[in-house]
Amino acid sequence: MRDLIEVLHPILNPVMSEMGLLESDWKDLVSSSTDTSFADVAMPCHSLSKFLRKSPLDIADDVLDKLGDSASEICEVTSVNGFLNFSANQKWLSNKLQNSLSDERLGVSIEETRTIVIDYSSPNVAKHMHVGHLRSTVIGDALNRMLTHKGHKIVAENHIGDWGTPFGMLIEHLIDLGLDSNSDFIDFNSFYSDARIKFDSDSEFATRSRARVVRMQASEPETIELWQMLVDKSLIHFNEVYQRMDVLLTNEDIAGESKYEATLPLILDKLEDAGLLEESEGAKVVYLDNWTNREGDPLPLIIQKADGGYNYATSDLACILDRIENVGSREFLYVVGAEQAQHFAMVFEVARKAKLMDDGVKAIHVPFGLVMGTDGKKLASRTGGAVHLNDLLMEAVERADSIVADKNPSLSKTDRAEVAEMLGIGAIKYADLSTDRNNNYTFEWEKMLSFDGNTAPYLQYAHARICSIFSKEGIDRKSTRQASINLSEDRELNLGRALIRFPESLDSACLSHSPHKLATQLHTIAQAFASFYEACPVLGSEDQLRESRLALCDLTARTLQTGLDLLGIASPQRM
Image (tube, rainbow, N blue to C red; front, side):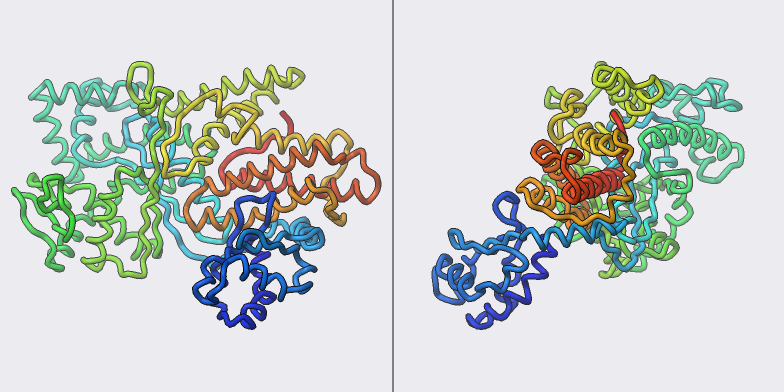
């Protein structure tokens, strides 16, 4: 626990100084213990052996002896196998919880504001959003929420694929279908694939498509109007998915490839001026030291293709320039799959060499793994194609509706539909966010919709269960926030320890761009509450004990609701 560590430092420092140690020699050894049932903070003494020329066991015993009772007001201290273990005592925990109880932010600090661009979701125009967009969307949205909560100005950018050579064939296909005056009947299930088949098999259509690209790049009004029609139709679909997922992205956050089209020649000039551009088979490329292909040959970053078209790297370099000069940001997060790691590493290196960004700019790739099916392969539809994201969301809600109907048949149809939406969408998002983003995870309906284990329904049920304690008795939750929290039972203490770790888990999640660290702590809180509620009567207790436990319940519900909201997940009040 970071707060306990900070309190312990001034107590430990005189003891360590007496033993001949500087603060720099020992303070980094103190770390949060993963075994919360054993100790709150563990300090290994093994690394101090080289300074003191003693065994870790003797060092731990010596420190314990010299501390005496100086830490007793804060914690209990024990020496076990060369570790000093500091377990926060009842009084210190109660005071910490009391502060959180009266704090709307539950102990979460506000940092000095930074402007942070988060690049996430990035679907393609004229295509359905599919399961491949799930992780970028939910991870990026969680980072948006968490970093905003910490006081930062977040500029969300949805870098949609809305420009380039495919649009020639899409516009020509639109005209051939007779839909160039009405996009309502465009079927994105087959629109792109049909255009691609025609482009590959019909040379006359391919010629028209290439000519259309030239007209689009020349900003011909008629062609731009048709292009805009495809973009607008796509935005309707994107927004339906975002609204259903309760994702913060709107049309105001669109920053597609088209936004940077006019800047691409400038990027070419800047790379030329920096002496970075070289020619390779008619293309303009940048070669970087230590980047080679599988054959060991120098690996180029392609800036302009031989046909004069620009590559993704050029657009990404234009993004960097725009985000620094126009957005005013010096910190960018790219929430993009792990397979793009090499691309971004090369783009960032070129941007620094060309002085598009200096060393003070933080350009960070936030990679993530794949969503896998139970067959061990990338999740796919029954036909082998990509699973449409909207279909996945609809199925989640349908499955959740059936579960809620069995679990609470007394709910009205309207209430059941509302709860099912929260559970279904929450289950999909939490299954993703509770996994270390660097890892692949398996998409399993039964597991993610279960009311047991580390799932959204488990956390949502814990929240609803607490709400029912107050609603059944008609108790005003706000009135409990004036009560004094006093912890006496072991399971009360365990719940208290879990709750005061909430701010630290959020900070850790933000610092490492890893929402699963927050999710893990929320699950720990929900587990601790279940144990507490089973062993410690709340409404059946009397007077001050009853008020203390009601206050603890309220604090738990607020923490769960706040944490779930920061992950973009709703908290039902009844289920």
